[in-house]
Image (cartoon, rainbow, N blue to C red; front, side, top):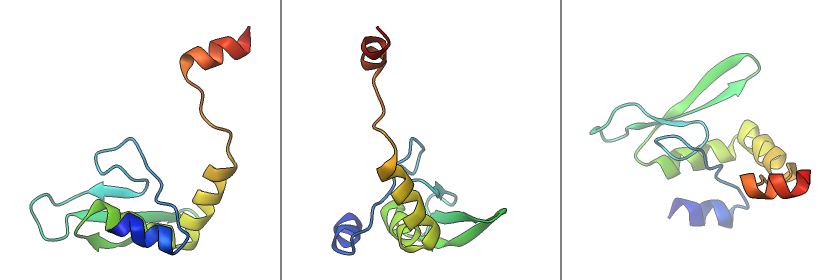
Amino acid sequence: MWSAQAEAEGLTLLVADNKAGYCGVCLINPGKPKPYRASVWRGERNVNLGSFATAEEAALYIARSPEGQAAAKRAAAAPPLLTREEARQQAQ
């Protein structure tokens, strides 16, 4: 549901290799109605954007922020990651 909403708004939910599955989202209160926290860095401060029922909802809130939009642009401009085998082939 939330990923469809992000797509409709032209936003990207940035995936991460963490328990929540998204950049800037962490699980802080398992078993509570809103266990996921969304946060971004503004300057040198980590700013809490709120608590959410799902990790996807928190990721959408981040994607709507100026910091989330800037991160999505950086990710889109970055070259694709290579597998170990692809990196070896390019090195040869």
